[in-house]
Image (cartoon, rainbow, N blue to C red; front, side, top):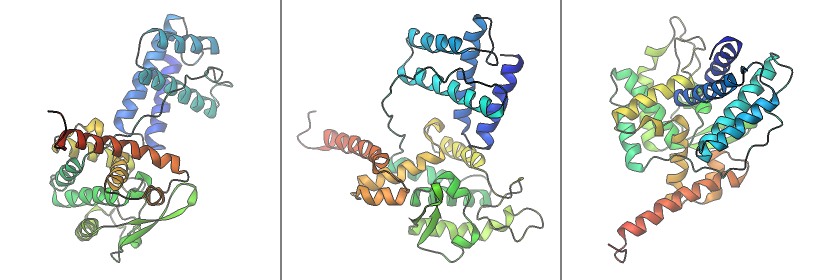
Length: 305
């Protein structure tokens, strides 16, 4: 990929990384998907920057003709659509050539979930990272996310004042400015106490009044979602877990699924996650049911050998 289309792609990926805190794996996937589209368009004598609606329609049709999995084809279509929405928003084109092409209907995928044993290993690996202060910080973040189901933006946006008095729960302002209660269990509270002892090590020079729970010497004064995702990948590898299965949002998935597996009411989990619609929460019941069914099949005395 070269020329204007390549420059636009680079700008799009930078926006996804900075503004939407896309994980490294997500950025790589978007890059591959757009490179695939650019390769097809090059065969038509076109570039991503000057492709017509007919060109994009032909590319989408080609995806279906290649025999790709439905998930892969849908992801590539979604990448192209998001790219052109970004280009249109930047004013680089006056049209969106992907708008008129209808996407095929696709079933909702189940979220990735770590088992309880894998979560224990991940927390242990986070606490064993090189550098005592860095290990305490990462372990604290993982414990908080898993204990309370916080979104990554909510976690990195926590203030010191919110945790300074060892609360049993947090008041979190989520999507749409809506507030909810997020519980903190004893392991999470202990992890916060241990981290607060070393928090000064992360303060920007001369910034003793930094308000963030997880300060950083970076430009924003606090740890970024992207950096947390990188550290989480490293801890997952140390724990013997495929980093592709781990992300900040997967910790939120584990929180919800493990609560349901333990018998929690779906409405309670909805409130804890801050979901406006219970249908969004219900997807976790399928994950929990699959796990429970597997336990019955493998552990019940009447199960077939």
